[in-house]
Length: 249
Image (cartoon, rainbow, N blue to C red; front, side, top):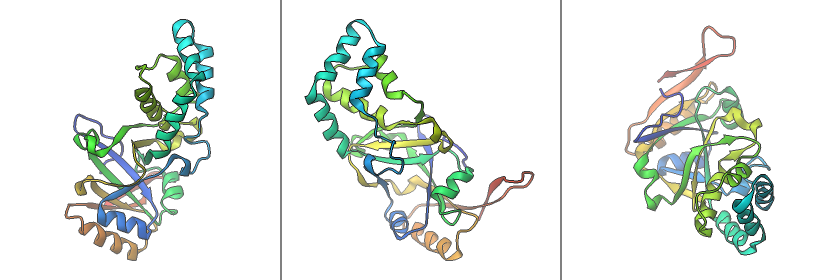
């Protein structure tokens, strides 16, 4: 059973903690994931950085031609309008890199009554233009990620390409307080349901308290995908007062 991200030339392994709901059952049966609009995320500071302010602070940190370049963008209302239009359309799907995070089980998997899904995404799927993916990366937990990136000379002067790169950096940044989540994200040009290959889901792990009826519902839903899915369940770990581990079912 995977415990963290496995990054190679071919695959990315990500965990998704979820309560058992009708929406989850439907997404399992239909092989979809939900990419939320940034404004709908649970942290009011998440994806709500003041972009103009970041440009201004980056200009203060810079000098010479790069400083002038940043100051020019600060005055360019059309660029920010273009970026805001793009930003309103994008979608974010959040994952974790750690199956054995007790806080994630409590906060996002209905106090251990839910599940943790393990997805293994093929790189060729993630880079396929039809997937409309802007970026896939681990979240950076730093207080000034975007400002520092702008100050360190972004890789393009093209306004549209810059707006796309900005969106990627913007959505992969969170305050250091959230680092316990060990989060990774998929960012797409579109929000809403995102159809993924059925074989992307490789494991479902049930919580300490997942009801048997929900276990049965999930097994039935995954059987409709036509792909092999492994099942396991969280149990109390031996050798530690608060440890947890997973056993195969």
